[in-house]
Image: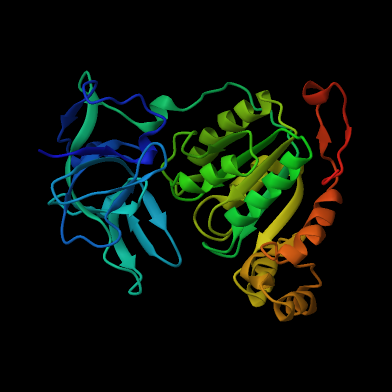
Length: 353
């Protein structure tokens, strides 16, 4: 008997084993964000795991059924693929462990073979397919004025999530109501779950907005992310830590996100793969960050080179000896105050006090 596993992209839906039907729909009916089921096939590798709705990694075997979502991915270090490239036979891949389904058209030769599946059908109710957008917030207004620390990177795996965890931890220590978020990228739950474990009171990502990844037309991205920003605003946090997956120049709508956040961004931290990448993002995107972190700051030589090339401060935040320097940097960020609902008063908060 086959085991059914729900990928973490299904965490916003109300699925149970008895409240949907499976229908084989024609390709003309497929769109980004459709919930579908695939059967695991192929030879098992270390990538034959699915992140479930709680964020746990579950091993899968050929014959198991996995519920995921049609979407796109364009990862610089791993692979590029789309649901549009799924073969006519239904052969497809898990583009991420969260259950982002498509077929890789470019894949790193340094990695094991990806998880392979065969399309079994769309999840339907009353002969209508079920989509992520059915479970996303809606709003007729657009109101967002939360002070935001923005985390951007020169690529994937540049240290954004690690940096975000440290930011959440320091402001939580100061007694502030912090929300952690990842607002562009390809769906995966464990990154923002780690924010919850290190100081964020609430966490959200673009999956909550009804998107499997943010490789969608810009107008669709803005229409989806605005209600989520409205919802975050209504919670009245002291601070939003907003991670943008990948880099601003990749096709994940990073530029649109920065525009939506606008003047609410009080600090930008660039996580870079190396010192020269800092200059590349500065010149290509016109971004002047307040701090550089990530592998570009791993050693004193790297920190010195960042300053020589760009004039920017860099801190190796994973070095215990640099903890106080990072804390002092966060103290200097303007525009962050405790809101009255937290302690009966507002006023400048000094990190570490």
